[in-house]
Length: 205
Image (cartoon, rainbow, N blue to C red; front, side, top):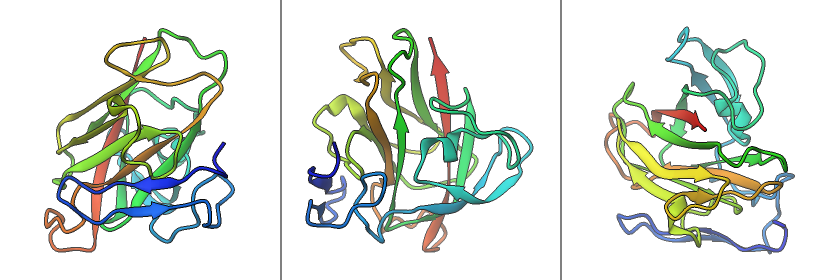
């Protein structure tokens, strides 16, 4: 599905240059371009529970971010835990996260989910997309991308059942949660090259 696709990181709302990944790039095992711009590991704090820190959190998989509520618990498969909030402590401003997940073929059609940009830390505007493509911030379906600030809900809610307003996911398919700063030159992180960004996972049915 991914090997022949072109990978696009679209321009941010502030006019940053496009970064285009084509099928001439080497691909990693999960179908992402072998790019130094993709974040793969970070310390992750769990502020909703015991505030513990996982030292080598896997940012390449959804479960590595929102499949945990503490630094030592067992991992939950997608869609992770309801109201699990993970703070990525080493989010380089000029890089992106692409966390892959698989929708089970028998996943309930009545279930849905969305993300919240938690206000534990004051951070810059973030763009979050759901796409079958790694690093795709301009998905074909505009319902699957949103840019928000701290304390706000990313309105690109996903749902299995057909919906006029929600981002549709197909049972049996693979997707990425793609996240990046809307403006990599943002100064919201105290002049540091990296930010601390907390994003909550909310589920419903």
